[in-house]
Length: 462
Ligand SMILES: [Zn+2]
Image 1: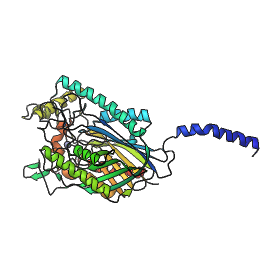
Image 2: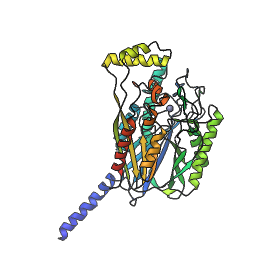
Image 3: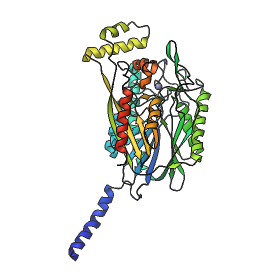
Image 4: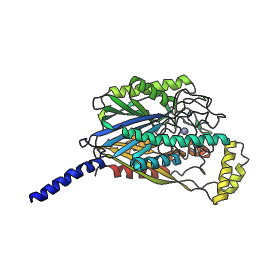
């Protein structure tokens, strides 16, 4: 090569080097396999007396707070600049429209694909009602609807900003994984001669595992703790009128107070058929929170296995079919049903039939799968999804597997195939509160499994 040409090439590389660096600032200075992590949190406690989400029997808005509600974010980035942000929240559930708005806005602002944002809620029943959520459950006056609208809009902005803060906090990190156990979760589908009732069922399926991700600085300081449990946040029942995260809120508080400076994030599992027991007393919510917090503490002190390698994520939709809905005549007959929730549901379905001539026949169900390295998989399933799915995925997906429910859209209960002949709240009655035309078909389990496994293959090593 001639000297002059070499000089030209050299000067080009010098000129273009900084530009190239600017375009690829993410993941810089990391060796292959190393990760950066960032954490952020924001208080989302409503400042006005808003209606509380989760119990249809409540008749008035919240009266102050037991503790603040939070949205929190954990951002993870690999050495190639692939990023993932996990958002957790002390909320009943992100409705689809809210999740989509947050993901679209954060995607635009920070260059994140939909697959890189996981939006999870703890399913606390002591948080606020959000717009487009459980429309059938509450009798809301116009001023409440407006207040809920305003709160939801502000929440969306806060969470977009939160994602930005977590990305802004990215710094080299050591991430490790372990699993503990807490005892207060119990199956709540008790089979009786009169059908399934909501009552403790000690013999029923349950997943009492407590998965934990520890995020440490390079110097070994704990910066963040992501932990999960698959159990309704319903220790506090409908007569409680103050904001709180229930057991998950108290567990986060416990972990943050024992690890000053660390952010504790609760990721809700597939606990749709699971309640905390005993329940209905404030001291039980703090007791369960302490038990969960100390289960996490035990894992943090034990030998945890490292999580490192490339970050890959996939997101897709699968259509879940509803059973053929009741006819117009059947809905009309239900207008005089003794239960007011059935009446309201029938009215809304008839309105929809009047407008479109038909009801939706399937639901577009979002599924997200995240892989870090070669054997750590995190699965985010939508809806109030039951334990069977997590147990099955943990059997069928290789390596270390963490299955979250209540992710990206909380739109209805998602029962497993075996539950359909049993019936009960999770299969049938809950659909009224969620404003769905009626129950799903049993085939939804296979559809969800098939799509999830295809996403697992998509993010797996070639
Ligand atoms: Zn629920």
